[in-house]
Length: 72
Image 1 (cartoon, rainbow, N blue to C red):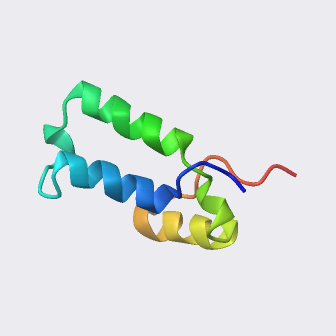
Image 2 (cartoon, rainbow, N blue to C red; image 1 turned 45 degrees about the vertical axis):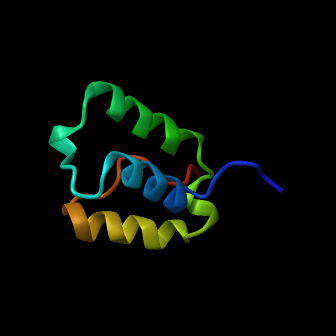
Protein backbone atom coordinates (compact mmCIF):
# COMPACT_ATOMS: atom_id res chain seq x y z
CA UNK A 1 0.00 0.00 0.00
CA UNK A 2 1.19 3.51 -0.85
CA UNK A 3 2.38 5.92 1.84
CA UNK A 4 1.28 8.98 -0.15
CA UNK A 5 -1.54 10.97 1.44
CA UNK A 6 -4.88 11.10 -0.36
CA UNK A 7 -5.06 14.32 -2.42
CA UNK A 8 -8.31 15.67 -0.94
CA UNK A 9 -7.15 15.02 2.64
CA UNK A 10 -3.78 16.62 1.91
CA UNK A 11 -5.45 19.69 0.42
CA UNK A 12 -7.78 19.94 3.42
CA UNK A 13 -4.82 19.67 5.81
CA UNK A 14 -2.83 22.39 4.05
CA UNK A 15 -5.78 24.76 3.66
CA UNK A 16 -6.76 24.17 7.28
CA UNK A 17 -3.21 25.02 8.34
CA UNK A 18 -3.24 28.24 6.29
CA UNK A 19 -6.74 29.12 7.53
CA UNK A 20 -10.00 28.34 5.75
CA UNK A 21 -10.81 32.03 5.34
CA UNK A 22 -7.49 32.81 3.65
CA UNK A 23 -7.88 33.92 0.04
CA UNK A 24 -5.55 32.42 -2.53
CA UNK A 25 -4.35 35.93 -3.39
CA UNK A 26 -3.36 36.41 0.26
CA UNK A 27 -1.04 33.38 0.33
CA UNK A 28 2.66 34.10 0.46
CA UNK A 29 4.91 32.71 -2.25
CA UNK A 30 6.22 30.17 0.28
CA UNK A 31 2.68 29.02 1.08
CA UNK A 32 1.93 28.57 -2.63
CA UNK A 33 5.10 26.49 -2.95
CA UNK A 34 4.02 24.36 0.04
CA UNK A 35 0.57 23.87 -1.48
CA UNK A 36 1.98 22.82 -4.85
CA UNK A 37 4.55 20.53 -3.22
CA UNK A 38 1.94 18.86 -1.01
CA UNK A 39 -0.37 18.20 -3.93
CA UNK A 40 2.44 16.91 -6.12
CA UNK A 41 3.47 14.47 -3.39
CA UNK A 42 -0.08 13.25 -2.78
CA UNK A 43 -1.46 10.17 -4.51
CA UNK A 44 -2.97 10.87 -7.91
CA UNK A 45 -6.58 11.98 -7.80
CA UNK A 46 -7.25 9.58 -10.68
CA UNK A 47 -6.67 6.75 -8.20
CA UNK A 48 -9.84 7.93 -6.44
CA UNK A 49 -11.97 9.39 -9.23
CA UNK A 50 -12.50 8.26 -12.84
CA UNK A 51 -10.46 10.37 -15.28
CA UNK A 52 -13.50 10.95 -17.51
CA UNK A 53 -15.45 12.40 -14.60
CA UNK A 54 -12.51 14.64 -13.69
CA UNK A 55 -12.25 15.90 -17.27
CA UNK A 56 -15.99 16.62 -17.34
CA UNK A 57 -15.76 18.49 -14.02
CA UNK A 58 -12.79 20.47 -15.35
CA UNK A 59 -14.78 21.45 -18.44
CA UNK A 60 -17.87 22.36 -16.41
CA UNK A 61 -15.76 24.54 -14.08
CA UNK A 62 -13.56 26.26 -16.67
CA UNK A 63 -15.35 26.05 -20.02
CA UNK A 64 -12.21 24.47 -21.53
CA UNK A 65 -10.97 20.92 -21.83
CA UNK A 66 -7.82 20.03 -19.86
CA UNK A 67 -4.62 20.32 -21.88
CA UNK A 68 -3.52 16.82 -20.84
CA UNK A 69 -5.40 13.58 -20.62
CA UNK A 70 -4.84 9.86 -20.73
CA UNK A 71 -2.09 9.24 -23.30
CA UNK A 72 -3.11 6.77 -26.02
